[in-house]
Length: 132
Image (cartoon, helix red, strand yellow):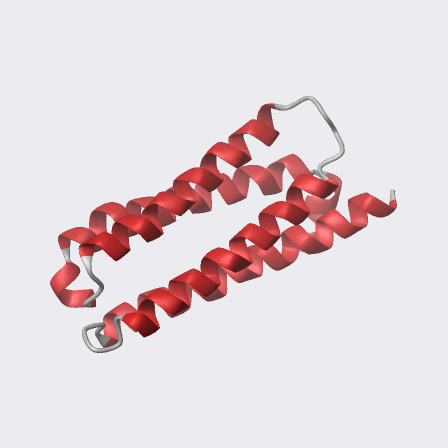
């Protein structure tokens, strides 16, 4: 159902990605930094993980505002960048395995699953747009 909706209106998918990236940046860079002792991820790592979604927001807003109607390639690139971000998140958690708490693992696991789900939809929509 989501795939059908977004394949007809890919700019809404770009906007959804920007909103999700904003939420991730806020949670990682503000909320989890404030409660760092509960998640066990170092503050520099949280700031790094928060900075990357800010770059996604800029990317999303650029293509949302752009008049070009063919978003196949930008969506494919975005899906790949998101997958790399998820790998970095898991690598960061593994690197900090001695201090990360169950709450930290839970947060990162949920975020990775949600973000990868969006990336999968973006990739599928990009392929559909590439065919038309």
